[in-house]
Length: 183
Image 1 (cartoon, one colour):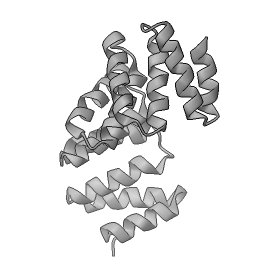
Image 2 (tube, rainbow, N blue to C red; image 1 turned 180 degrees about the horizontal axis):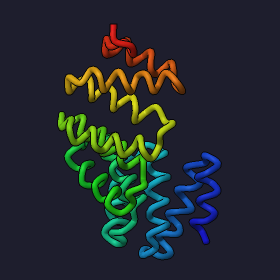
Image 3 (cartoon, rainbow, N blue to C red; image 1 turned 60 degrees about the vertical axis):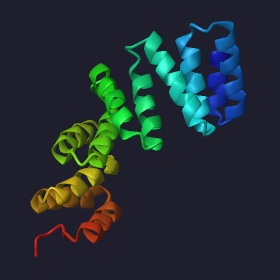
Image 4 (spheres, rainbow, N blue to C red; image 1 turned 135 degrees about the vertical axis):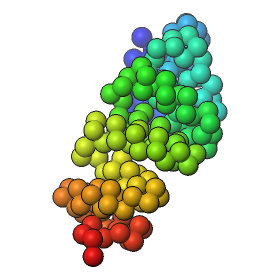
């Protein structure tokens, strides 16, 4: 299959060659949602966000239960700062794939941008349960807790991060003004 060769090019970082192969696959069979999905991925890697968004919307129209396509659509929409459009994409992704930690993280970021901090906490807590050793969700969760005027919750997170990501913990202490240990 053309798109399987395209995957090899994509994984090797040869995005123009990958895009060409995925385009050939789509031209040969416009109903091939995988070829369209990977064409979207190649377009995104090449900086063609609008092309990627259009492809991902097309994939989801043809295959509404494609959780990775919903996730990637949310990611591309965030990159374009189209937060109101990104939220339903991430919500669809977590509905279809409740263990997609990146979808919970993306939803949390969108909710932060919309200043819906209580909802952001819920999404980020789901992310950190799924990826407990990734500092990204913890970092955002601590920031949200500080914004919600919950310094004790933020300090707990900073202490947790000190155990496995001390640089991130130190950065949070500087940014929030909260020491891990209450003075």
